[in-house]
Every structure is written in C-alpha cells, then in structure tokens.
Image 1 (spheres, one colour):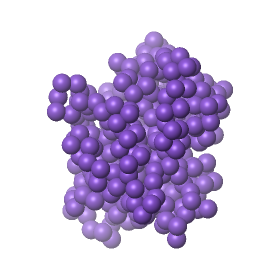
Image 2 (cartoon, helix red, strand yellow; image 1 turned 180 degrees about the horizontal axis):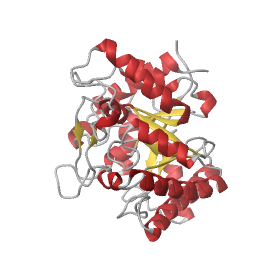
Image 3 (cartoon, one colour; image 1 turned 135 degrees about the horizontal axis):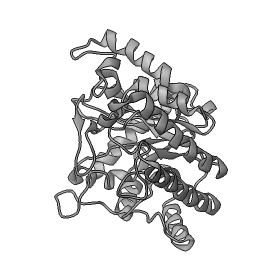
Length: 341
C-alpha cells in the first residue's frame, strides 16, 4: 500500500564524513548533494527533503541569519524540507567530549546551542517543520571502560545540560547509537545512558540500521552480544526483537541503511558499522523487515520522516545517479510497508 508518511529524506553528511581534501574522496559540496538528491526518481516519486550537517564546508555554525535564510531558500527551491540537524559536537568542530573536563563539556553544550539557533531560523523560514537535533558523546569507546559507571554519569550530565538548552528552543535531541561512541557503543549501554539522562521528552535515540546491526554482534562490547558469527536466520530475529524492544521506546529519529557485517572508518572517523549500498549482495539486513521493528509506533513518538544514511561511500559511488535511485526505491518500500496516511 502506498503511504504519504513518513517523509523520505536524504542525508547530506555522506558528502563530508570520512572525506578529506586532496584525496581520492574529497568533500562533496552541499550544492552537489542537493543536485544528486533532487535527480533521484522512482516511478515519479522523489525525495521529500534532506537532513543537514551543521559544520563546514556545508554549513557555517556561526553563519549570520541572512546566510542561513539563503541556505534555506536554496533547499526549498528544490521542493525539499529540512528535517533533522547534526550538531557539531566533536573535538575540532565547535564541541568537545561529553565525557571530558568541565571546559570540554561546556563546548559540547555550546555546539547544541548553536544547532538550536540554526534550527530556529530554519523553522521560522518554513523550510523545517519536523526533525530533531542529533548528538553523540563525541569521544571514543575505549576510554569509557576505565570507569564505566562514572563515565556514563558524566555523559548523562552533559546530555542533560544540552537538553535544557534544546527544550528552551522547543527541540529534541537524538543520541545516535554507534559502536565508536563512549557509553553508546552497545545496545545495553545505550539504554543505560538514556535512563541515566532521564529526560524522555527531550532526549531519545537515533537508530541506524547499519550501526545497530553491530550492536547485535557486540563488536565493542562482547559482554552484550546477542549473536555469534555464523548465526542462523532463526536466531537473528529473536535477537533483533530483544534489541529493538529495548531501544524502540526511545527512538525518535530513524536511518534506513545496510551493513555487510563489517566495520569501516575513513578519514578522521573511527571504525563503526559499515554502510553499504542498498542493494549490496553482501548486506546482512532485510532492510524493509528490519525497519518495521523500529517503526512500530513511530507516529506516536513524533517521527515524521526517515532518512537514508550511506556514510563513507566512495565518491565515485555517490556521484552515480543510479545509487540514489536504488536508495530512494528502498526507502519507498520501507514507507509502503510501515508508513501511514
């Protein structure tokens, strides 16, 4: 059955994450990412919008209002909405580690504040009507093990301070679970962190099919693995249900993706669940069926759009139009199976 909702968005950050100037995979401009997204078409259906990365070279987090309105005009000229925004919380951008010292944690909150300011301008412009602000702990998983309880408490305190800022702006924060982020590197630790933050109206979970697949395997947290290599299909679905039952009540933002069971990192990005093409023959996930586990009750949790994420694809793949048509076709199948009107 064809559904009108959720809206289908493409992420802009695959043009930036893992990209480095002067290499075979330099950053791809926002203009080019918009062109590729707008050119995708499947049986007359198109993407409805984009999710944005709030850092250079796509977005200056300190851009003045006029520059941000011009960006909004450009996005709207394609008939797109802007949905979720990625706050520049990492060291080397605006922010710093949520598990760091007082100064680092102050920078983290500042990054969220800057993201909220931009969100407000987009909202007032009219190009943004839904979506969240995405965060993570902005620090690697290895150091967390030095003192798990204290470090989770510290991250939770930072998230709470950021959440107060977000709530004042009418925004929600979605913490992206990836095996590379401290305190968020396993499904169980992610639940523990969200419970420690204890602000479910403002802080939730951003689920990505590729990243959460590695949660099952316990890649950076073998003590929380739900599956072992060589598992059978009959073992997969009960494990997937256990994980999604724990995290779905927190899930307020959702990324459609594929994973081949490996980790990957390029540029400055640490290794995490590898994003693969939607039709990758080595993909481990039945994308449409897995998406249904996360999208149960999505409307009640305020989800109005879903987004594709294909971070760290080589530029040659991103520059091939058929890549985006295949992705859009997969997104449409997800919406047809699990959407609403």
